[in-house]
Image 1: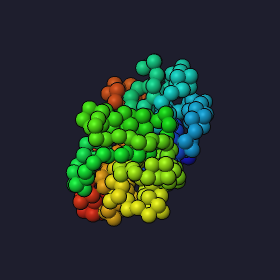
Image 2: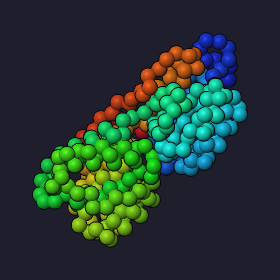
Image 3: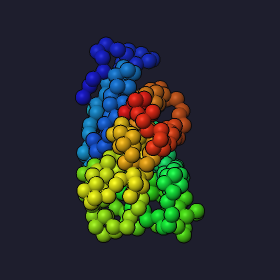
Image 4: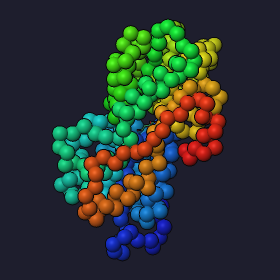
Length: 310
Ligand code: GYE
């Protein structure tokens, strides 16, 4: 796909910069907003964008990256669906002298020279923030007694799933060892359908769950449907904390069904294009360009909703 305006040129010469971008998929509202942001920002920057959607499959991302190498794009950017298994294809890019910029999600590699930088959020901190905001939610609800948590994890092996889980557990183990317990935890693959299905199973096996921590809004929204179908009140019988802050999440929160949201900003396009241009020009960039985010409680939902940009 090439949707940059004809005749516009990138800085420093007549030739337009070509960016190959391999997207994870279209699993969530976050992802939809992220893809749009990347397309808009590439157009704005006057880049030629080659964009592909991997439908949450690593092998599709690997073949997209290989095709960008074959097409000799100037820079490759991608959001890796899982953290492991990238070294071989990244080495091919390196041998072809095409710089790689990671966006949104990170990879695990022993060779740090295989990518230039990561533009994205601190997911471990998002997990910690989720635990912190749950403290407030429990307080506000006047909750007494054991906290029995169900966790809906993101895609297995994906950086946000691993790290959000880790950050949450860190706070839990340090400060709530006696009163909080994760009684069930399973992946819902960051989708609504996954969240609904897995939550329904959780409610069957563990009807005493009183808190849900969902790694994204979409799974939380799917879970709300399962909770209601089981005759319980989301936001009351089961207190819910999610991550992302997409519009539908804010709608559910303004209806009282989600208690708090930890924001994860998908509008990474402008920052990404800036970095891509610098990398192309041979400038040095920071190893991790972090996104700034906030947290929201239910009483802020109605007021914040009209200003949400995604
Ligand atoms: O939270 C989720 C999406 O990688 C930060 O992926 C992203 C996550 C986001 O599917 O909704």
